[in-house]
Image (cartoon, rainbow, N blue to C red):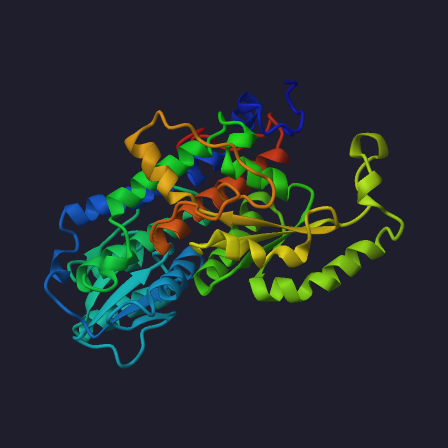
Length: 407
C-alpha cells in the first residue's frame, strides 16, 4: 500500500497494523488484561480486610468517565439480585458509616471529590477500596487507610470500563457471596473469555469471521443508533456511543430500544426526504455512486437468552432494504468457553442478516449478564478502533509505543 493512502480494506491486516500507530487496537483488546490484573490483586490479598464482613451497603463513588459508567452498569445488572443496596454516587452521602463499604473509583488522582470521599469515609469508619491511580493527593488521602486496586495495565481513556467493572465485581464477590457473588463470573475466567473475544476480533481475522470488523463495516457510512433492550444494555449503549465519539470521531445516538422503535417512522421519513425518488432495489453503488439518502442502522444490544424474541422486536425496521435497518448484537459466551477448552473448534461465519448475534436459530450461547456485557464491551471498543483506522493514513505520527505498541 502507498504511504498516506486511506485504509479502507478491513481484510488488509498489514495496512491496519501500519495505520494503528497509536495502539488503538491493542488498547481496545486489553479488557481481559485489565480484568486479570484485578484478579491478581485479589489473589495477593489486597482486599483481605473485606473478608468475613457483611456490610449494610456498597457505595460506589465515581469520578467522571468510565468509572461512573461502570458503577451504573453494576447497579443495572446486580441491583435487584444483591442482598444489600448498591448505591452509585458522585460524592459521599452523609449517612455512610462503619457498616458500609465504599469503593472510590476514577482516573484523576487530583479529583477533590474522590479525595474528600476517601478522607470522610475513613474518618467515619467505613471500609474503603480505592480503584484509582495511587499518586498525588489521592495517595496521601488513602495511605495506609484503604485497600488499593491501582491500574496495572495502561490503556486509552475510553477503554477503561472493564477495569472499574472488575473492581466492583471483586468487592461484591467478597462481601455478598451468596447473592451478588453467585450472579457474577470468576474474574480469572472472565479475563480468559475476554481474551478469546479479543482474539476473534483481531486484525488477522477476516470480516466474515470477525464480529468487531463486521460491526465496523456495518457502521461505516451509516448513521448509528445504539439501542439497549434492558437497563444494563442501555448503559452499555451509552458507553459505546462515547467510545465511538472519542476513538473514531463518529457521532452515535444511544437510546432504549423502545425509543428507537417509536422513532422509526420519523427516521424513515427524514431519510426519504433527502431523495424522494430513490429506489434501493435498483440502485448499484458501483454504477450509480453513493446512496443519495442518509442511511441509518440501529444496533440493538441484547443479553436476552431468547434471541428469536429479541429479533422479533426488530421486525418493525424491515428487512434491510430501506433507509433504516437494524442488527441484533449479542455475545457468544458459550462459544468462547468452547474455544478456550478446544481451540480446534472453528469460529462460525458471521451472518449480516438478520443480526450480528450467532446463527439464525435462537439458541446462541450465553453466560452471566456481566459476562455478556463485558464481551460486548470488548467487541464494541474494537469496532470503534477499526472505524478509527478506516479514516487513518499509514503515515500518521502518533506515538505507537504509548499504549504498548500495535496489536
